[in-house]
Image (cartoon, rainbow, N blue to C red; front, side, top):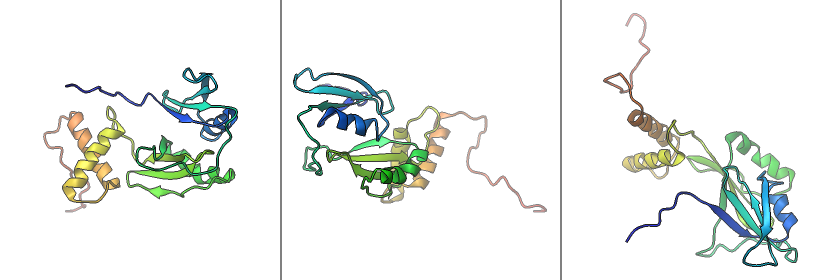
Length: 198
């Protein structure tokens, strides 16, 4: 028996209401370019809208002009998507509260997740949306996942509850030491500043 190896998220499709509500939210609030549209090939009464969330992949929405937006929280039972999280820069994240407020969108306020910052709010149809911003950049040649995996190992070794900034910093140091060569025989931390006359 062999695996069917995934290589990333191809797209996420959402059941939307009318076409304009989708365009106004996905492009008009979250800035995702509306890149193409065609009929839903499985249901002729619906349109299929495609948006680029910023990484060249796709968020797609099935729309129908007979469906109106329903103001209610989406179900959160087992087997149902809990929320969609989108990456934003620290600069954009710092503006999120103000920009949501300008539109009168209720939100969770900033949540400290240790390795990232988050804020939650609902789309016009009640789907929970998260804006997430990492607190670190991975070293060259590595991904955010590489850093988080290493930070997890450090957290467990130290018996600590969750990943925080110290684990991230130490994980990045470990990854750099393992992946980048040095002419030094001893790469351990040093006290480079010596007291005068000492």
